[in-house]
Image (cartoon, rainbow, N blue to C red; front, top):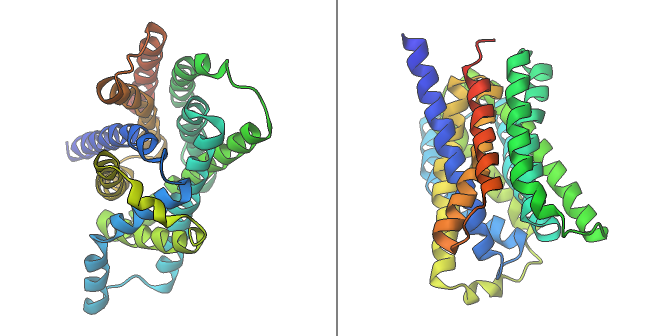
Length: 299
């Protein structure tokens, strides 16, 4: 049936983007040894915006540019999902560490998205979906909590946690608001291009005091990581995510984000030689189970 095909392609897109973004944690960790969080975010999205510039320019010449209302909404989405989101995320990783980041960002985003979509979009949060979200969250906790034992609560750690909580709120609002925009326009590439450009523009003044001279110290491997973040994660990832949101309800799309830590640990094993332990494998199983329970629920 057409509806089933649409749902399957939406799930496939959500899974693909979750794997892509999961590997982005590995790529970012490589680059953040040299660049500051805001410098990396700005560089990433300045590069990512280049392919979308001709699309936006073409729409302008054809007279098919978005109206003032859509432009304001796209600007807000760009600020929430790119400028503020990545500044908060990279700052949170810097002060709170990777374990806390995975727990708060990946664990809370689907839950907060479900709450936001039920309030803003009036989407029902059924018991099965709630169970799936809780199961996935337990899996994320099982993966990350053992890594938190050595962390002592200090001012920097508290700041990092606050940034990561804000990070999760930003993405939940973006997923909910962008779904409404997707349903209205039905043009994922169109929305992604404008949102990416707005996000890059907002990052420029945020990075004016950064040490851009550090770019000269980047190794070839770090530049490859930057390009992966900019082209694959930002360009392709956001396009796939917006496509998924145009085919799935917000909660069903967001639950697949639980796959991100699984992809991150796989990337660490292959690229950095860090092999996950049995607890991590068990947590990954719960992550997959939670995603399946929520995605396959009918209501």
